[in-house]
Length: 400
Ligand code: HEM
Image 1 (cartoon, rainbow, N blue to C red):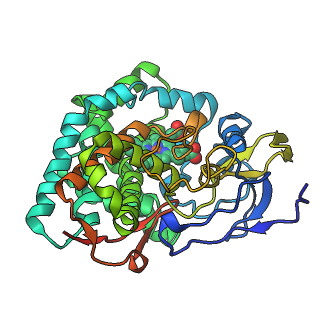
Image 2 (spheres, helix red, strand yellow):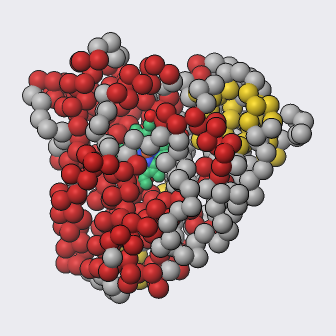
């Protein structure tokens, strides 16, 4: 049983490609100290991580409003108390209900034809402009931006500003407060204006649906709706872009033998997407944070009241008691248990089915159209774009 002053240090960001990150073998919950000095309890076993993410004694809201230690790298929109992700209990449910049914597998499957046509347009543009090409500028960034823009009903001007807003909304902490504030105010102004427009003149987009549901629900503070719209707009493209970029870096750099089958068989591409989602982390952080409302036993260890708890989904996805070792050997085999790549419990990723669809279709159609696609620059020379919880290549130089 560790003593509370025995804190293991957690390393800061790496420059290794994400698929090369090493994880310590999972073990009992342990006290750790983050690079900024924050003390926390890290949970790494699959069952323990599921317990932390599903037990209401571990919440998000109290991280912001109690005496819990401040969290590393948590600036920008992710630090907003109005954000869906930072609500607990009934407040969280009420806000999440406004999007009930919007992102179910059945709803998402109905979007397949227009998402496919966006993928094809992007592939046409790549073919017209290259080789060579930058896969980030030409594919992995504009594709999810166009998908979420169409879903939320964004105009061309907002699309142009999206990457800029994302950089500050998901800041890695390197932007000063002075620089961040006006950008976030502009972003919130955009969210508020979009909601107002759709109230006046509803369409068939998700923003209009959200406004209707919020009016039916009643009593939801406008600031929460604004942050929900902004959170969906940036969350809806940033994570997908990051995952797609990091997966392509691995597939093209190290697993070229899988490319022909990914191009020939969309179902096989879906299996690869699921396995890579499971194993390629979005960034360097070692756990999503929660706050313990009470002394709570997890995996045989009592986590004390008021502790910050880090549920390390990356380590849990490698737990040898649940997943066999050498998980990357066969990328086409189905997962042995549900992945924690999208979290678990009340904050389970709202966009999980959309992200899966975008990844599957992107990998399949890219490999079908460009069977000879290969990296034009080694993976270890990539420059990295860092966000609050994500890291992805600035550029992926390719040729074919
Ligand atoms: C590969 C892409 C994606 C990954 C890996 C991912 C991952 C995650 C994870 C792990 C969480 C839970 C965090 C936690 O519990 O600490 C989450 C929450 C969330 N995700 Fe995603 N996500 C992706 C794409 C998307 C997309 C496309 C959307 C929107 C369309 C989205 C919207 C959200 C929202 C709104 C939440 C917060 C839910 C809540 O607090 O109730 N995500 N995501």
